[in-house]
Length: 370
Image (cartoon, rainbow, N blue to C red; front, side, top):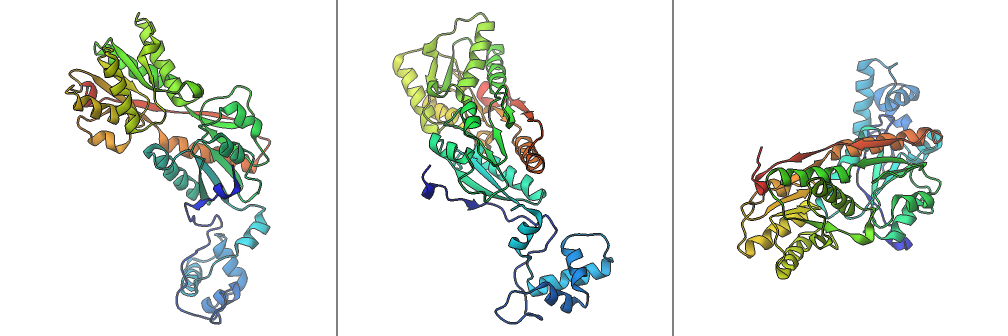
């Protein structure tokens, strides 16, 4: 990854772990104009000692409520902020977490980033977000620690590299992976069982009597990725149902986008391949597929039943509404932050693997709302 591509965005301004109030500067008090207010300025304004101010900003309990209220009022009035440099020197930490995701324009990753920020903020950390665009060199650079220890730890959702390669590229910073399990890895993992969810979704269509199913979204070049693993679940389900697996019924998608879904259906129709159900690797692919079917006069679900994966808001408002796999994003995010903070505090701890849950939400696109 080129250094100019490693720019981070400050995605969250968290309340400091020590309880420090960081309000914007208010009216001037004891501090001279142009000078940053100090602890002594706050103490003078509140009529207390500087040690009492320190106790308040460090959220210690040995301060009377009325005194605490007076100190906090002085902090707000003066716009006092603690020194980040001093805080780092005292604790040996930055209280910054780096989070690297493939594509923040995708609803799933935007939701995941939001949830990670909220979880980190609750633990006193600020989050910096980086976008890798799934480039292997970018993900390798992130896993190696960015060549600079500006954060206490990293959460990475790899897309261009398999987890084994990421593990090999791991540098000095604590690292938690969002993705598939890696046997024998020294890294903490939070995973969603893509293969099982693919099997359950396909079984749902089979239970509705659909027999000519096509999977849309497998990426053969990324057999470690979610599209391929969900396809394996699709294959497992149809073979258990006594249906021969046909590679011609697996349609790749370069990206998980609406356009990819539209092009996949156009290809299927151009080949004249009969199908009565589409198992799509993402909601965006499914929405694009339904658009293509509608343009050709095919009805969903009467002619073709369609499923997606991600439970993005758009799917609940599409016409028809979209049956989808809903991953537990909030739990994935919270456990990833929890594991990273644990790893920061104890780098010798045994690695953990957490499997986040998922559920199938049945809607109109498979004629099974409820």
